[in-house]
Length: 266
Image 1: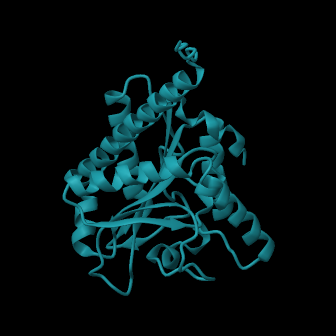
Image 2: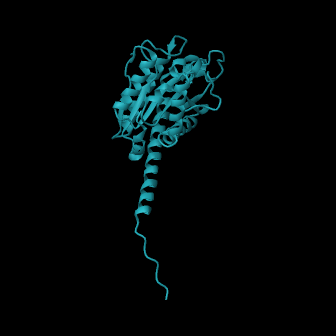
Image 3: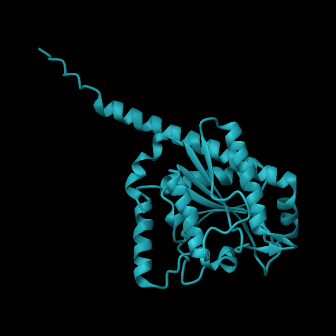
């Protein structure tokens, strides 16, 4: 991973990488005859279309546009998604997933995950994502792996961390404006975010195990509203980056401004 290039983030957002979670032989959650891989693809394509039509000059790159597998096993599949994003020179990465809580069908809401280790993180994770997609998370049982990952997380605060958190806030705020129940922003040890060399998040668009939310996510109206919320978040994030640019430009101007000599008082 090349985090050395992170200083160039604020040049702007020119390439947005949209990752429809799962696909092919890795279907994700499955409820009521509906597969997670199909929901995520529909929302991803709708989001991409909104960006292409509403943000001229921004290139959209998809990790997949059809129901297909990207790797021989899940680890390879996740790495392939990151490779696509990195090769495209992405400025922003958004992975779209649907949540599930098999033992609590009343659980609902949307949440956005960023790369990190929560204070409650142990060998196993309490989040519903872990129950359904254990292989999506980095195994921290190996001490060497854990040390490398924790060093990377510590480095995030100086590189992509601020930008990923800003994007996550934009997404959750956009969900709230659309009337969704927010479950907040959570750090997770996600393989796909660990491997992508850009600010990125994984957003859970609802709980498939909740019949009401499943109906909403399956509906054209629901998919359009979710895609619109994510699109608005991308626009808000772009404005954030532009604001950071202005701050940097002002700081540079202040630093480079000639210092006038103090007047001589006789």
